[in-house]
Image (cartoon, rainbow, N blue to C red):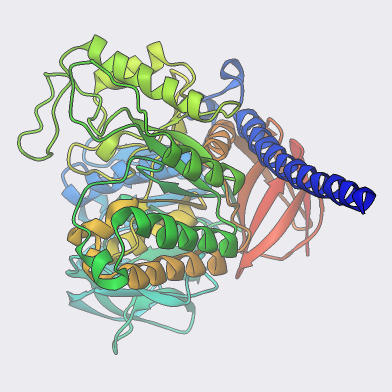
Length: 609
């Protein structure tokens, strides 16, 4: 009996030790996974010394496009501001001629012409020359809604127009053909709609790609072959940052094969996460769940966010807020309540995500020379030293909470970042490689393009936000899929505490809307890569440097890639022929005659059938 009891106790101890060993293995595996993920993200960046910025890369690109604009026409000036960046990002060399100040040059030597004028009268007989040039094999894009007048009347039949009026019509919805643009096959609501489209009808020779979603179905984007060449017409009248992708898609119709570099990446940010329990009105959380704010985030919101991430393959990038105090003196206090940070942060890392920095508190990096003018409810820091101390404490806290991880991304609170704050980041905190703020102009927002800056910082703008994706954000989202093949989105956990961000709807409806956006995104672009912020920054560095030399024959497409590092993503529209065998890369069909090339070598050959 005694021997039996001794044996039982020994076996019991063995079981307990086994359980502890299993827990240790799980914890070690999780920690190893976090460190492994950190190493991947660290290697996503190119070395600072090897980065070629986009500004440097485009200097030696030969001009293949002639752009005609008129500085006396306000819409022409606005259009050039957008097209200058469109051409830069598509790595297309363009010569801009202001017809108000300069003579229009000979068209020989150009592959395409883009006319950024609604009133063609200043062109006079050049309109006829444009028609003759297209008939001989040239390609022309009229990017702005044309005004019916004498010179437009001369050319409108060549554009495929069979009937036209002197009036414009309302464009409140634009329907995009699903074979034309990524994310098409549906209509998009136009915010602040007005009579922006010329009321026309086109004949059977015209191929229409977008139209008004109403009974009239006025064509908004179409092409028409004329002689040996082609006209493309944009008739929707909305020329702004949120429609760049529409113009890029239209421009890609002009030649037999169009190629341009893209990012191929999707990033979802969680701002203020992890952080202390946010303050605010938990009325709607109490209404729907009967829980405190803390309980809701732990038991409902975060499990739901993880479920959506698993379903769609999303890897969240969370950005840390140390505290919500508004002390701007520089007298920093170390955060003692660390359990919440470690719990959520480690789960996010183990999910494959990434952590970055948001703020010591939620006060933007601004000094007293910045005047918020009652626009934003913030203070300015008392001194440069105070600002520096706050950032130093934030970075210390991040490294202490998550040892072995690489935190390299900074998101400015409320997307506000002063010149002095940015200079301080570059000078004092070299571990910060990425600044992620706003793509669009906002209240005192730090506005960005997708680019590597000359000082080494990667600018990574966020395009849309929240769970309530409004009409403007939908338009911007589909545009950027076609401009840069990218999605960047951010959401705050405390959206559930703010009626302006949809709190009244309740989390079930907000979750459903966010899930519907993800469904649309990954159904429209199943080959879109899910990345963390630093991984997308590496893609931005590679994309910005890339210059493509294209050579097209009847049988094949040859691409030579300058400033090629290890891989590159290139959008290819095959207006003539279809792709066959490929050397030096992989080709994925997206929609219609649009393909995504992943280049693995600096020379790529694609058979054309």
